[in-house]
Image (cartoon, rainbow, N blue to C red; front, top):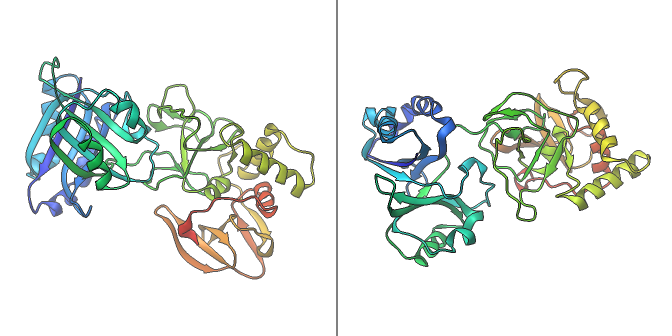
Length: 379
């Protein structure tokens, strides 16, 4: 039984809310398996929270009341009003399955029901969507949706075109602990909020929503976020685990290569430059997988290998260790990578050797001119 729970903050409770954040997250951890969407609504400047929204699958109305009123923020007096309504998830997925388009996120609460084609026409930007229901679930009494669009004007135009009344539009953002599905340049799988420009996988790594292994095979690929309109939920049992990379240079440093299906042109370019620079026959995918695996991991372990290479030979897009932190090579400078994104820039050494994270075969591909994508913030 799915519920929409929205709690509106009292004025001047931001400091109290901040103090309770770990207690709130720990309370919500017990409901992780049933969570569909969650996160705070924000003021128009997106500087502080105005409320807390959860869409959650629970056994019954009594469990929903327990969920809402036993929550630490509610018990401490953060909220001035609590709304609990039956709801139906018409997307049949969670917010963690939403690929994202890079826009701003909003929560819309309204009376009425959008037109029949609304869902089909907006599925790619809807994070959550469904009707509010009467207590017995028999009648649709309103609509709640979470959406990602360029700005507030876009969401206002979206709902203005629909037969909705008493519309509330709230700035909103994802809440909860970040999912452990981001990959660092060292190949580690971590829980950080940094958005990914690419997805990919290295086999089935999860049970439920927990990562339980580092890799499942030597096939590590980088994929496009969108391909032929295909969509698949995350954390499916017995299916590969979707991973996300800040940019392509990070994915290459982690030891991945372009996918041969969704990135066919990039795969061929990578493969052909591999053959040219390494002076070997055009490799098969298995040939590349085998060599990359040997270059990224110490055999029989999960320990990461690094490689001593001359600074002068490193192409743009290669990652190195800089004072034990990863940094990307870009021309005459290095830009440090952090869990929050790219940061400090320093001058690249003119001589000596570097501890290189990116596998040497991929370094050769980059040296041969492969046009690796690096986030603009690194430049």
